[in-house]
Length: 248
Image (cartoon, rainbow, N blue to C red; front, side):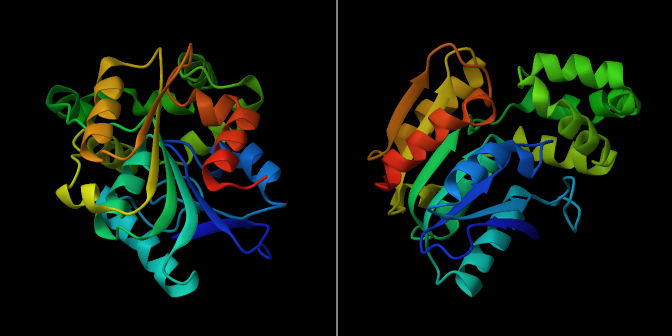
C-alpha cells in the first residue's frame, strides 16, 4: 500500500481513509490545513488511482494499515478518519485491533449489507464501465455526487485510472460489509457522522454502529449529502478533528 504524508515532523499522527472511487484528494484540503499540527498520512486504498495492488477486501486493506501502524508508528496513532469505504475499513481496523487509535471519525459508512444492490454491482458496472472515460458521463456522475467543482479534474483522472475489476471488487465489498463483533470492545473515542440527505441505508448504518459501540457519539449533518462533510467542507471537518483530538 502506498501513502502520502504531510507534516512528518509532528508528534501526533492522523490517518485519513478516502472514499471508494476517490483518492488522496478526498482529504487534500484537510491535509493542507492540518499538517502544521499533525503528521498526516493518506493511504491510497487498494485498487484505486495511485495504489500498488488490486482491491481484494475491506479486511485485507484494514490489515495492511494496522500492520503499517504497528511497524512504523508504535502500534497506535492519535486519530483515524474514514469516509464511506474508508469508514468501513476503519471499522474493520477497530475490530482487528481495538487500540489502534485513540480517536476515530467515521463518515457515511455502510454497515448493513444490501443484497440486491450487491447482486447488481457486476452487471451494472459491466455495462456502464466503458462510459466512465467519457467526460460527459463523468460530469453527470460528478454532479450527482455533489462534489465541489474544483475537484472535477482530479475525480475524472482518478476514476479513469480504476480498472473494471477493481471497481466491481470494492463496490461489492462496500455493499456486503457487516460489522464484526469485536468492534464493540475497541477503546477508541468513536464519532459517527452522516448527512441528513443520505440514503436510509446510511442513516440506519450510522445508528447501528452507534448501538454496537455504546460510548460513541452520533451526529446528523443537516442538509448534507453523502461524503459532503469531508469533501466539501474541509474547514468544518478540520474543526471537528481538532475538537475530537483536543488540538487547538
